[in-house]
Amino acid sequence: MTINRTFFFEELHETLFPNGLHESQYQGTARILDYWAQRHPALDDRFLAYILATAYHETGAAMQPVRETHATSDDQAIERLQRAFDNGQLTWVRKPYWNKDSEGKSWFGRGLVQLTRRDNYDRVGHNLGIDLTTDPSAALDDDNAIRIIVEGMIGGWFIGPKLADFFHGNVANWLRARAIINGSESAQKVARYGKSFYRALSYTV
Image (tube, rainbow, N blue to C red):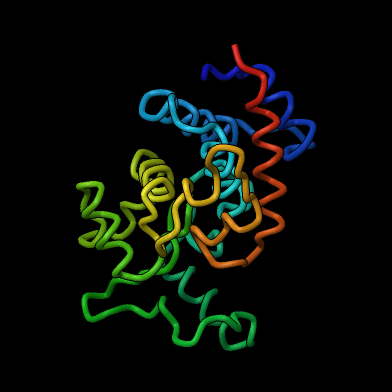
């Protein structure tokens, strides 16, 4: 599949970016498209659409690797998460996962897919052959973040489910595919985003 990028970005302007894409949004999206074209051009384009939808949701449409809460530093992210937890806003969190460990590292969400918890950093880093545990902020590196979201969603490295479980043949379960990342949290939103990206990808050259 060769994507008609003119149509693709024009379509996104009509749907997901009504005020147009900022340069950083454009560049972040284009980097994902470039990686896909180089590494997985023969795979189902619904995979790519749902990866893009996940990045759109997990980064608050920034399409750039971010810290959880969009903080500008680790300490700020920890402070924001703790405040939200204390205020009862993180009802799904049983035990704060952002507290610094004995090495002074915090394993809150980072990247295009908000990788959290040390065991996930360990597993994903091992699978990719990159060190995400010496410095968890390596998940914010552009190249690393793209590899994490793409290969992780294809391989089912996060919590088990993978893209092929929900998109194969005539099956396209946009709603349940959220289980790849975070159960059913925001499943309807991400499904809608995925369908928008899929329409944008539908006009090829």
